[in-house]
Image 1 (tube, rainbow, N blue to C red):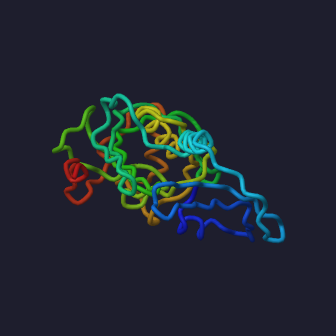
Image 2: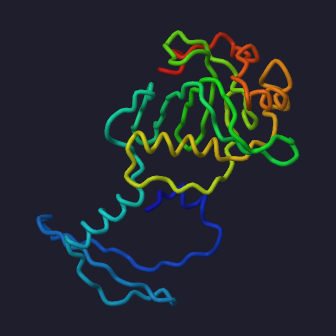
Amino acid sequence: MTNSNQLTREISSVIYPKAVLIAYVSEDEKKHFLEMRAIDKKGNMGEGRPVTLEFMNDLVRNYSEVHDGTPCGMLPSNLLYCDTRKGSERYVWYNPPQRRMMYFVESLKIENAEYNVPGVIYESKEGGGMNVYAFKGEVPTPETKLYAAPFFNVTSANVCMGNPKIESPRQPTFGTFLEYLEKRFWLTEFSHLGGGRNPTKSNLVLVTKAARDKPFNLNELIPLNNLKLKDLLI
C-alpha cells in the first residue's frame, strides 16, 4: 500500500488497473456494502464479489506484517532519544569505543579489516537519512562535546549512504531496528572524503591505518562548532 506521492516517484513503467473496490450505502446511511470487481486487460469490470470482514482483516494483517517498521519493546540502554510518530521519526543513540569491521574501495589502499574507532553517536532521520558524530569517553552525557566523525563518506555529519544488501527487520524491536540502521552505515564501502577534505587533523587514510593495531588517536578529532549532545536531544 503506497501513498500517491510515493507512487508517483516510484512508477517507471506503464501500469494498469487490476481490480476496483466499490462501496454502497443505503439511503438512510445505516447499511453499507463493499464489493470487489476484477478489471480485464481491456479495462472492463467483471462480476462483483462481496468483500467479507475476514478478507479485510487478512488484508490489514498482511499489510502490517510486511510494512509496519515502527519498533517496539524494551528501550536499549544506548538509545538516547526517539520519536516514533509517522512522518517525524528520529532516533539518537550511541556506541562506546570499540573495534569495527570496515570495508574500503580498492583505490584507498586500506585493507578491509577491524579497526579501533572512537565513541559514535548516530542520528537517524525520517526518510532514511543519517548523521554520525564522534565523542570522547565511554558513555555520553547531555554536555558531551561532539566531533566530526573520522570516517569516509561523511560530510558535516551527514552520511552518504550506500546500498548494502540488508533486509530490514519485520516487526522490529528497538534493539534490532538500531542494529539494522548501524549495518547500513558500517556495511557500506568507504569510498571518498566527504566535502573533499579530511575530517581529522591529519590524513584520514593514515589515521585509519594507525587505528588497526592501536587505540584510535582522540587528538585527531575535530570539534563541530561547539555542538553538544544536548543539541540533538530536542
